[in-house]
Length: 309
Ligand SMILES: C[S@@+](CC[C@H](N)C(=O)[O-])C[C@H]1O[C@@H](n2cnc3c(N)ncnc32)[C@H](O)[C@@H]1O
Image (cartoon, rainbow, N blue to C red; front, side):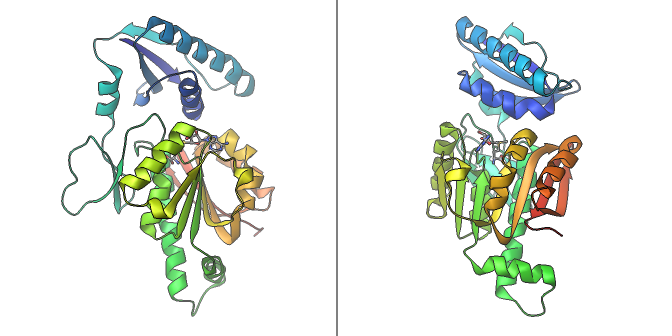
């Protein structure tokens, strides 16, 4: 078994991970230590290791043109006496993703009594709960839906903001999750009371995994998943969430805002604190206003509303 390790700037881990899956990697694990963020993968064949090393070299050359300050280190290659699947699975542990919910891989121990569990099947896609951005987004989705549900129940004595929220709540309480990965945010939304959730992703493996995870949790009736691009989705949603890298968020700014229902909320994460201002400026230039933020470690979540303010 050959182990490949790449030390990579945190802002590029998602993009490099996607690139490695496209190049044929069967499982990519993220690790952090004193030297920073690492992507680690295992190969059974030397040819596969050579192909994936070339993919990293190619990615590094392209990334340098756009992000000259973001490092992608050389590939460190070594022989290890274990299979990647065991190593990868043992790295996946139950993760508390909100105050309410624990995300638990199917191979983990049974849930302790009283735990509100969301189960997921390990698959080569993002969204196992071990990353700060998943937890930031999960908490924000839960909170946004709780607010909409509450304002639906009581519309008396509302402030202006609450009134606007109540207007959004008048329509179906839909959630659109752009870059759904394992579907985790749709599952959280469905548990929190969303009427319907729509998860989209460019990665067909992720969409298959998300549909399986919805079924595993008995939530298929509330969740739809598709590889259709954002532009092909007709609906506007009361809550739109996107956990994608900052350059892609900026690229998708207009269609993301166009999919938020009037007085709905847009939740963005996948950005580092050093990228916060450029992402905010980009969305403000398209009419959004900041309604709140959250941060875990270096990772930031922005809560935006369509319309100036
Ligand atoms: C960081 S993962 C987020 C997964 C999950 N939503 C979570 O919060 O853990 C980002 C996902 O976005 C997908 N993605 C990247 N660019 C996209 C695009 N333009 N449209 C839709 N999905 C995209 C990737 O395939 C990946 O599954």
